[in-house]
Image (cartoon, rainbow, N blue to C red; front, side):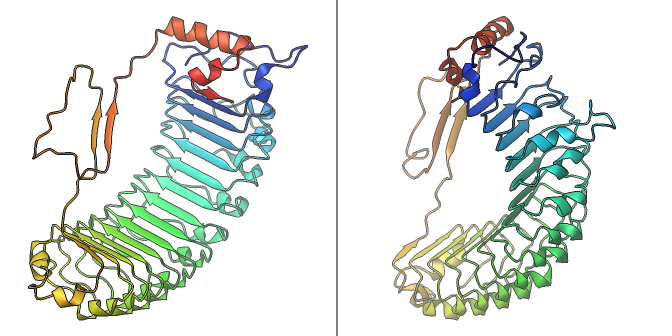
Length: 422
């Protein structure tokens, strides 16, 4: 959506926009113009602002002073966005101080973003911070760990130049969720991560050169969920995992060089769900699995070199669901009634060795008339079927005229049509 006309900064009568709570602007064409001066002057009740794919947006300067109720700000896919582009030395990001209700901030796909605005130091209410696919943002400034003491969720995605994660991450003493994705040159996690005593969810994905986890991971006594995915150089997990006394869910997937799991797993007495997916060089499961007294669900998918189950499996009295698929040697040994390992799992209520497709997605199918379904392509076992029509943008003149009508009239329901909701 494009906005090309001026919006008055004040009015004798209340603007219909003064009651607006949520606004989303997306897919604004390159020639669609800039946001008009004073466009945010009546948005004093706005709680959520999402701007996606607006190439001509350069900054939020001049708008923040009006967004005093804003709780969520997301800026994504804005090629020219640089919050420092028009900030003078005398300003030093002072406008950010007006966002005293902001708790969620997302910067994504911003190629000109080279550093985080210093004004963020004044946003003491921030709880959730996501920084994704900003290729020129080399690292995170240390000051964010000193200022954002209340941060509960941190998501870092697409940092190709990040080789080590800073030790000062330990200063995020309130952090509950940490996600690190697509950092191909990250080789290790810092010991400082072990000081995050309130961390409940840790997700590591697409870190191609990650080789080790800190042994002191056992100190994460509040950790409930651990996900490790697409780390091809990870060969082992630390024995210190036995100290993760609160861990309820462990998922390890697409780690082709992982050869074994730590014997220390016997200490995971709270573990309820264990998924091991696409680890082709995994040859055995630890004998310590007998200590997983709370385990209810175990899924082992596409681990072809796994040949047997540990003897302690028969002692997993809480195990209700077991799925083994894409592991031909192991499946043979677990064949009902006759397999060598069948006595170890005979007590399990639900056992399956079927491979289910994850989903089927079709997009921009402007000429499709039917789906060629057969026995081989049946969707009966698929969990997701997604169909999408092609996206046809409106002409720039139509978009501009419509946007002007929205901003200049009192017809609030039109906002919903263009992605603005009340």
